[in-house]
Image (cartoon, rainbow, N blue to C red; front, side, top):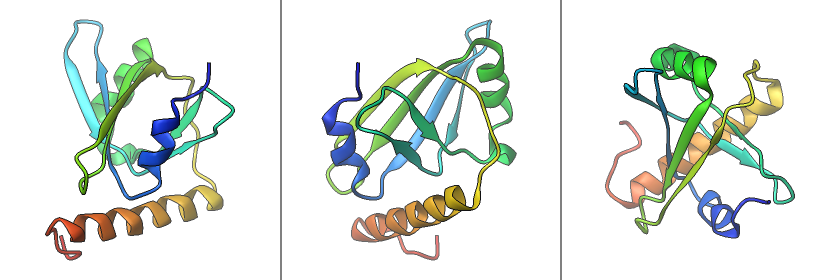
Length: 120
């Protein structure tokens, strides 16, 4: 199956994203994400997270692969959660870094609309 069309509506603006994971002992962890790339014709997404922040979550993903990604638009309070299995990790490319930088700019602009200064 393909991803829900509403996901692409949410991704059109800067959104807040978290990846939630759990250990084998059912202990939860989460990490803020730095962008999500999705293709309309696929049921796979690429989620960008900073390795420096992802210690527990990354260990959980490597252990059991279960992940829930929560995506929230701060200006509309619309939210969506994707649940699935982690397929693996890779280093970012120059294109990825440009994508993440554009995401960061979009997020800063959206957060400014709800009163969060760019300096934060």
